[in-house]
Length: 477
Image (tube, rainbow, N blue to C red):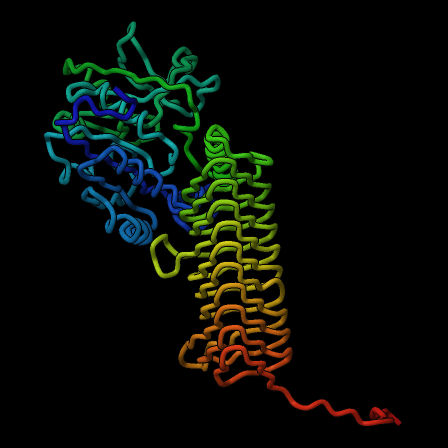
């Protein structure tokens, strides 16, 4: 049995995510759960994990910034999800128990409820699956961990191996505060008894709140076994309450990705200076230098080399390509018209920019300060410096000169430039689309072309040079 296999697959899983808090210590107008970690909102990480569990439904408890949180999740989740996404409001916020009480109308009695927090983004699906398996449909299962300093966490009080209660910090006795096993805030519990226990909660405690943790004592009183599934990886239960904690968890997340890539054989110049904000897939013998950022879906083929300080978003880069330093690639989703593709053995950069729709064939060269947008370059084409190619179709072995541009926009519409195979474009040319340069042709430097040219022709379109002898510049008297 694998770690993520559900041995009770006939019992539906319903996930509840608490995401109503204000997050005052973030010192931001943005709701805390919408702050980004690795390019995704904190709460989106949690929702995506719920999807890995094949949840039947996900219910998000919202309060502060409710409209923003609901809009962000609905826009990113509903179209691709296999579960029902619900939102319930907690107004005012009267504690964790009060929060989960708001979900009772949408919870079905036949499921296992997994309670998660929207600001605890890195709990792994296989860990939660083990917790669900420990619940097995008739136990209350708690995810716990040992902390050397358990301050502010609810302590796990046991009688032998059996959990008797969770004691919150402010309600704990000095002896109870010595307990190092703490409750992570994550539980799996059968829905039917959970509803009954939620109805019995009160706020007779030091904080005057309705504690979800009080259901442990109700379970014990009702003879329902309470079990703890203990883990040792603190990152999985780390919550975020401040920008400092967000930055710390970002690095922990990136370290996890870097180690996984290196275990696959990727050469990272410095694992601490890598940022993956999406999905990065690497073939054999890929090397990545420092300070590179990968966003969206990026695929690097065998032997690809990425130089330092590159930003690559939504791109497929074929085997043997070299991305020189300070290159910026910004594509669209793979398979879309805006996808960026870099062919085998291509050389890109330094300081190059590939925009949506750039599709480069094998051995294409795009050099420093060259921008390519919505253009196709066939095998061996070169634009080595200081150039713009927009809405262009470029044939094989074309040489595109420094300072040359395609003028593709007339103020209302975009037009295409076609440069056929083996054309040589001189420096500082303006190709005003729509335009076709015939195969094998040459365009003289400094030309501005507005008409198609036939194959093998030399096209020169510039004013005749005039020299005036002994000319004197104007001067101030």
